[in-house]
Image 1 (cartoon, rainbow, N blue to C red):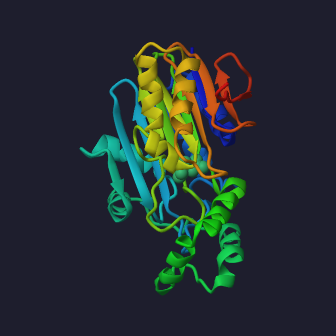
Image 2: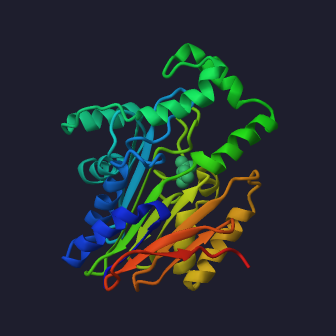
Length: 313
Ligand code: ASP
């Protein structure tokens, strides 16, 4: 019965979590475990330790987790100094009456829970930051440069375009996992360092329940990767699950969600991907652009497989 789906960069996480699910583990523990593996990997530049910094050279992490059995959810955003954002998100869900705790509050919560702060920047990520911004006279974390940063980010469209085109090539990325366990429970988790070179404090869709993550045992779950502003504006993850609730098939629900996304005036290079899994174990991936894939693994499979994400016909 167990099934998992993930974004393309989730291979190691899905493998470990599937072993755990086969042994009777819960979907909620499985998605947290899977996320942590990617968060700890310094070679993944879009999640956790080693994630690409913001425009000031600081790594700010976002994550969310949702339990399809209870509809409880937890999330953190713009957290600095703690790499396992998904575990902090789960703590928000289980140990506070809140859903979303951000920045200094989330860092305080981590410290109160006994975590030690640690710089999440790898030399490689900093080097990429220096190559991009060092020549503009910026120094990591130096706030008097914020004025120049603001100018860079508010340049007319052609420079914005450059930033987003670069984003398409190498500064987007997030990991997400959805699991269905042997008890028939669904859970979903999303973790990211967000858009590389983002404005400080910018929060994408990943920690926003309903935008980048939604999970309901009764109908299904959905999680997003891509230009988060689009999924926020279209309430993408919740929309897909709501279309399932309204009786659409999985493919129809995904395509309806894509229609909502394509109605937005997305700039060239801005795209959105969705993975989805139902309580019956049916899965699919969707994208607003061609050539995107996702990973899935059912209990009887030796390893995860890639499948194409569907587009609007
Ligand atoms: N959705 C993430 C964000 O906007 C980035 C990504 O998935 O590539 O923060």
